[in-house]
Length: 195
Image (cartoon, rainbow, N blue to C red; front, top):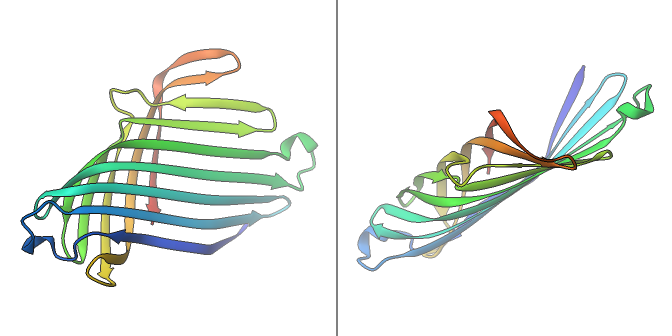
């Protein structure tokens, strides 16, 4: 099987806030928008094309330099299209759409940061040519996310950077056309995303 990975667009972390919060005694607001889009194309006798888009929005304040607390919202969309299979029923389009949010805390320095997010809730919708299903994380814990990042100050308030995000999701409920079902054991997914 041959595989081709194309990185089409990667807007890494673009943030604003104080460049050096250590010199400030007032709480400093910060906000970060990260996004990436990439395509994975695999082919042999059939073709499978995957398009991924991730948007990550974080906002918070430093409570005591270098410690920060805030909130995170993330949307992750993965579209998979298969074609050229002998059986027409094997050719389909599947879309995985995840929306997650939760509180975040960590340390932020001038050029480096480490953040942890408790994913309070996460919904993962799976849509295909044959219907739609939704997986839900419970309010008691749908997972966590750990970020390690590097940033370069562009000015005293704007930064450009890159980070790796390690994510663990746990879904305990499935909702589809047949109703709502508890998943035992829960559905778990682990990801490592560059942003």
